[in-house]
Image (tube, rainbow, N blue to C red; front, side):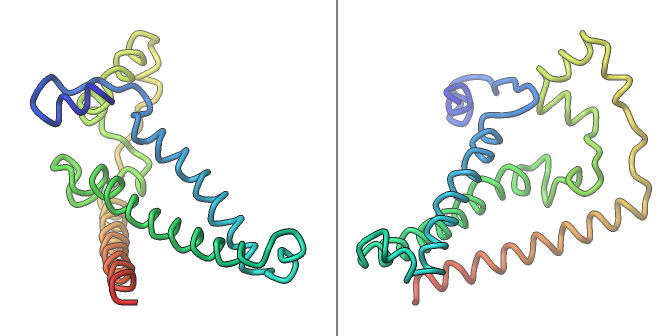
Length: 167
């Protein structure tokens, strides 16, 4: 992560990554924290009478704050980190199609995950993993579906920000 910050500010080369980058690992951990925070507070809001036997009544208000703030934090994180890493980076703009096609171009792997590429080459496993790229129609469907999802996500993000500002 330190190497990435150095690269962002022109103080070093871009770090090399293996199978998972630090931001992807953070994404996975953030999901579990978010599930616990939103799930626990959501149950308290769903069954306030039951939880009032266990906790003081004021905890229901705390649960409401936790629930809404965690949802807002998740929306901001998804917008800032996910959108940047998967949509706004010039090599992936406007979207990274591998989520819909299941294929990762070899050139992208060499560029974005050189350590994984080198490891697979050294182990002799890369050729066994190669697959034919998607045809025209699956790629067109993936692009259309992905673009529609991206636009819907941006629209919902704008609505969330407007709701946070004005309500």
